[in-house]
Length: 117
Length: 116
Image (cartoon, rainbow over all chains, first blue to last red; front, side):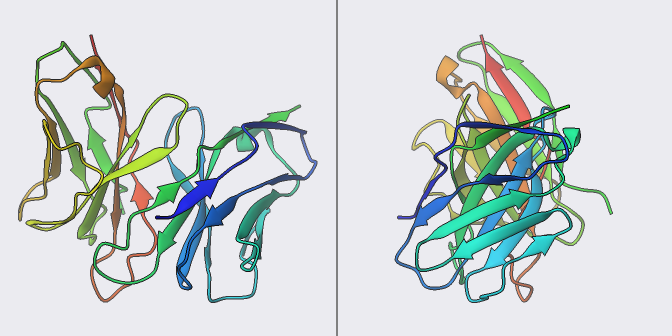
């Protein structure tokens, strides 16, 4: 079974600064996907960024980027130029690649990020 | 293109009653997933359905919980004889059909169930 660990329950950052959220995972699979989801106070789950394990290039989406280290099984999220609207719970998630029942997401417990003005 | 719809957003039930949670996937999506989020926890997978089929229900409690995704209409998560421990947020997600790798799931706003 896969496990996802987010070792930082809470973090804070000043507006306009950069913050990195950590995520490690454990799997015996070689092909998989990794995701970061954001859950603001509205509690809606919003996809932030995704990474295919077979790609060496780190994914980026505007101010969000990841540092994917496959050998170390690490998948950190970097938020640049933090904005007040980035305040949310951030969840790291894992999905095996393949058919059948492989599409369920395994989530970490989350990191609560607060952006201070 | 409307997103994943869930209703009701909030549901209050007394112990022993039934709870029915509905999920309409995004247009064109034929895969539906249900997750449960307990307070201070991440989301936990419950069940994965395609139209008229349960693909994986490994996360569903063995009793009182059932799910369906009929040919017509929304997916339903049904909890019979609710207990206080069922209080949680229940999220539905959907992804595209076979042939398009369903590797990205889009979530609804969730239903917050409170059992009194």
